[in-house]
Length: 336
Image (cartoon, rainbow, N blue to C red; front, side, top):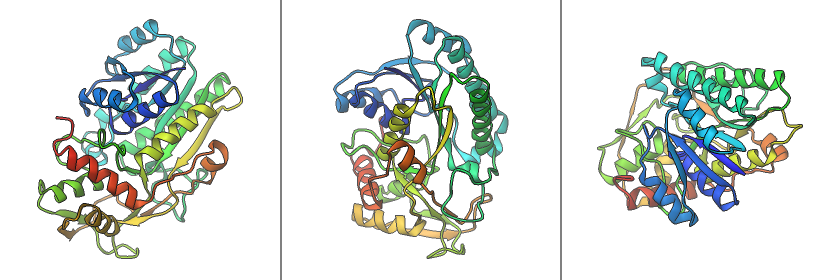
């Protein structure tokens, strides 16, 4: 089938494009390149042996979306496009709601008008807020502390309403945890603009000597070593989850929710130690005050994805950091 991948030039989107092509799907990327680089398309082609169709555009531009759907006979959509920095969303909430929520409404409206009602949506474990227990299951209460998480939760609620109103829609909402790693070839990986916001690329920059040290936000959490614990998942496992979710869509599917995580949590200092071993370099760090809105522990119960999608994460922490270091050390300037 022809799959439109919004935000397909980004970190998770690009890895998903590779697996889609390897599975025999045609891929069309729609991306405004605001947080990505066009070189990624050459790298995807190197890996898969197939060119990637690309239409540059913004999901806030409804006319641009309409042109794409008029030009191509699109069978399904995987929707990654959106702003994703928690701290930035707190300082720029209107920008996040306009981009993520309004842009998504444009996309869904154009999909409906063109009879394209197969959708896999990139959501986030952020919608669980600070749960009372672990591991986190899909039926846990939903809440969030920041506009980024609110935007994801709003879109989820919109899609649940759409699915209830029109049974022709087939929708998967994928709540994933902390994506890390890179394609094992070292050709594509996470390439953030400016100073990284996520742990793994920040640690990699410290290992390269680009940044002097890692600031660890909080050393007094009730965890194994006092630092925050998260469910880190290899980006290739995450991409495979999107492929499995797409394959599971059918007329009886409706709107379903799935966790994509390993079911195991690692602390910040455990990640730092694993990265030091993989890179053979020291990772200097200092413990600083907690960040507002951070929680102590977050890890998934992925049972539902295993049972309903036939999906299970394959890579452990050692593989995640090894692949991330290969990408970063071979591409110290990212795609530039």
